[in-house]
Amino acid sequence: MKTVLIGLGQAGGKVTTELVQFDARMGFDAVTGALAINSAKADLQPLPLDTVLVGQDRVNGHGVGGDNELGAEVMQADAREVMSALDGSITAEAEAIVLVAGLGGGTGSGGTPVLAKELKRIYDVPVYVLGVLPAEGEGAMYQVNAGRSLKTAAREADSVLLVDNDAWRASGESMEEGYDAINKAIAKRVGLLLASGEAVEGVGESVVDSSEIINTLRSGGISALGYASAEAAPDAEDNINTVMSTARRALLTGTSLPDATTADSALVVVAADGERIPRKGVERTRRWVEEETGSLQVRGGDFPLGSERIATLVLLGGVERSDRVQRFMQRAKEAQEAEETKDERPDPVSAFDNDEIDSLL
Image (cartoon, rainbow, N blue to C red; front, side):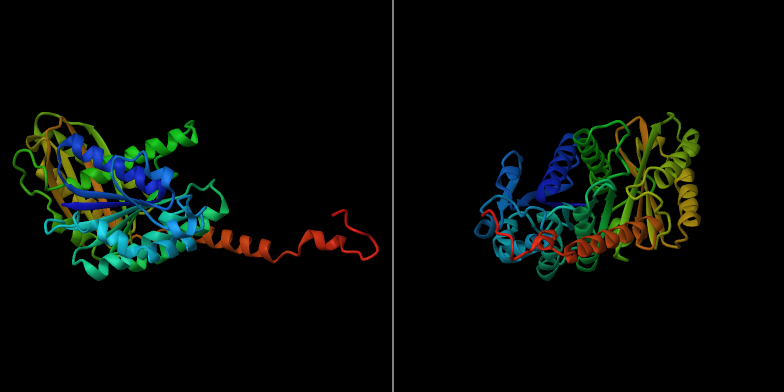
């Protein structure tokens, strides 16, 4: 799927960079343009992408400090400048626009729904959001920001592909190492999905194309992506069980949104050397995903690729009813209520008000 990437905020810029580099390294040519947007000048400087600095008149290049309301305001104010910067990137060959952002921060969290709405007003291609949820251990502000951003982005974009920061972070990793690993994992998985049908090596029996990705995400709301891989045997018939086992791992333990298995629609993509992909295994896997997700709209296809491994992707559309999403929104709500309660507490200094005692200053 020919895609234009727009990274918003610090996390969005880093993930977009990883996606662009993965696409170039693999020779897929699925990414046709990329832009990074931020209100913090220092975060844009190291990125090897075209960039736009927003909010200069409000924050003077120093960022919005995690204030996603301010992030939304500066994006709204500078929307014309951003759209001008995108003019050369969004050409007739673009089949989708993907906004990439960490949903817990300020610029990405606040600016993403605003820009999604503006892009949908002008362009007649799907506008998706690749949104990264804050880890459970991150502060209340990040949870509240992400809850508000997710709720708004799901309304404005055609679909929000969610990545839970807790899903792909290995135990024992430092915070910085964890984020780097997550960014690379996102780039590999989402990069393969975007490239499906674009960089086909060999001939598959039923090659996935862009329309199947778009139709899977057509239900809107929230989506998730599962991934798993394994060594492939030279003979396709010997890989039937391998395709099934990688699909099970992708859906049950390798998804970007843990425990999200109830979906409105799904797409199974099996990537490997074309002669190693068993059509029977793909069809059997498709039926299993149908039963597991409760969806009657499950598509399946091949992604012929010069690789001796089999990689299985499972894209789920319409997972907003999943337990994981509901738990996160409850956590965000509780964090917001706690912040509001804290704001309502009396000023502790007022307990010392006494006209008979003079202040030192």
